[in-house]
Length: 241
Image (cartoon, rainbow, N blue to C red; front, side):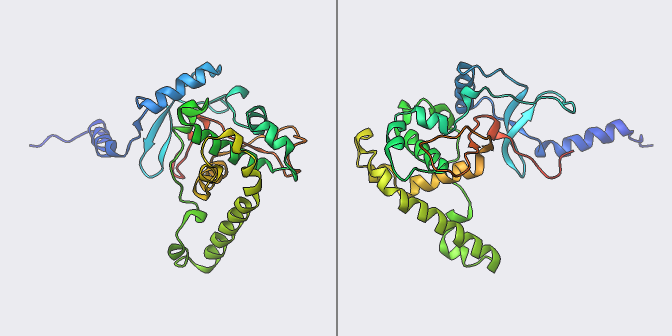
């Protein structure tokens, strides 16, 4: 006579079946180890969150401990944030202050990202830049033949976004040309449309809301974007409890 399996055995079986759908801890990867070191140098206190790869949603942060309602999950010191203050304090600052009409906060952040990405190992932000996506799938990044396949409302939005980014890039080329003293290479090769598009997508997909104090050397557009290393790895599934 076959022994009936109890609830414990059935639960084990369900766990075995779902093991392939669990998050995979990626904190061992060299780029995340370097990011942790970089954050600690900037007074970031460690948390129970670790980078992980999740089925369906990709890269995110996984908690190693149970979370309670109202608990602070992560707190980044200001020294870890990339804001327009960061940009103005950098070597770009004097050029931004001289340029008229003033550049927008968004353009300032994009310019800084392109410049630091180009600097490579010389960049103080290398550890953060190394974990950023190499490319994006925003509508502005889609090939025209792909955009043509979209439903009319989405197609119109994609074309509008592409036009907006291209207009911003074209209008900024005069400002970019003033930055030539900072680079050994022709500035047009540093601030290519491809490099600018990457920076624009980085800011627009990863920035958190943070109202900064008004910078007189920037345009009057709202200055509310900040890039927050590690925190911007947070992702979520619509099915989590």
